[in-house]
Length: 554
Image (tube, rainbow, N blue to C red):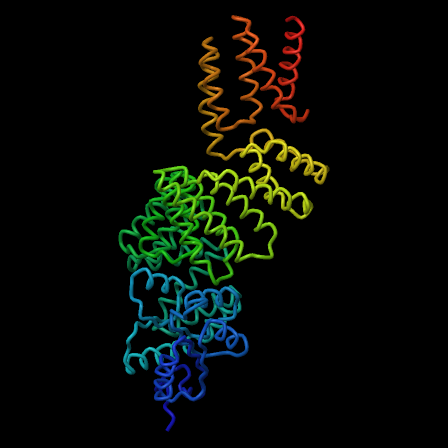
């Protein structure tokens, strides 16, 4: 006898039978699929399909529609159930009408929170009994038919249709009134109808304080640029419900808008402690930590982001590059043992990237550049130079195919490791290829002048300031020492080089020594590449002429 799903008194799908519905069971273990299948058969299901991994499941979901998917979280190699659901939802291949149950033996908080953030329709921990499973299935299917019009509207992305369906649900289906109200307010916010959304929120909050309503209120305040009131509300939401993870994300964005970077970082760290399995959150924390020069935290977050991106559409070279660069920065900090460990890890990730993207020439060259950094930190200068030579030769052969960002990275790498001749040849070749691109010409000029990292620029600026202060005080020996330290961080900066030359002129006036003239000559030769369009070119020419006149007098 076929089992009927709903009671005859139900106002939605009263005559719908489980035997008429289509089910998909996804699990990498045949025994687990058999167990779920037997439960479904016992419930009266006759139309079911099975998949052993995400690839099979996605193919089936593209070929036909299912009423309910029962998917294990851990699917072995490849995508897990959570990643698959996220991809299908983003691509539109998993409609709202298809109900999802994620089942898992893992019950750790971070796993559960990660699953909840991707919003499956239900979540079931293993082991589970038949009665518990039957209750969940019947509840979900009943919900699916009671909310059919609203779910269809949500799948259509027709905001007006969603609002209309929400209003009808609120009016006629008390059981789902709260959820429909949330959907309606969220849709109004997405539409930009903030005044109407705010009015509905006031109606909700006048009856009872609810953290979801306060959170939406804060979203509206953020959109209206009312950052301080939004911060107050979001703190209240987190205080009331510490597991409201979107509130942490929004609070961090508020702090960022106020340039309160420490508070933003602390907020995101709290969020990832509770729910670490969100790629964008880990990326945001990594970038913020790197900005704060917290390289240990940045490396940890970049590593998490890379792991979360594997087997998804987000698995891109940038994830590997960010981690490698962070490891290379970490290699400069800490003990000698930590240096070696970080640089070894950077090499490993760079090699993984080359294997992952074997046909991408740009990735191969970028990987070699990053490996040259890691080899330098390990003191392997000959191996470093071999990698740089490979990059240079390949880049020169395919110069028109090298992206501009990579092209400037190559120049920076060559200059940084004292390959001045190759660096100048590479930049000159780029100038010919991009002769009509004025913006890129300016970038090349800056790279050739100062091919260093932002961190090195800041350190150079500190010593340059000290040198200028000493110069103004007439202490030219101290000025030379400070400018010399600045050049350690930015050896090709025209302004620093000219500051050195100018200081030598002052010393020569006080005590004419031939070594001062020799030093001035060496420093000015560093600027032979300086284009006439550079803002320091006039000063360079003036000091050069002054030196030539001085040499004639000697």
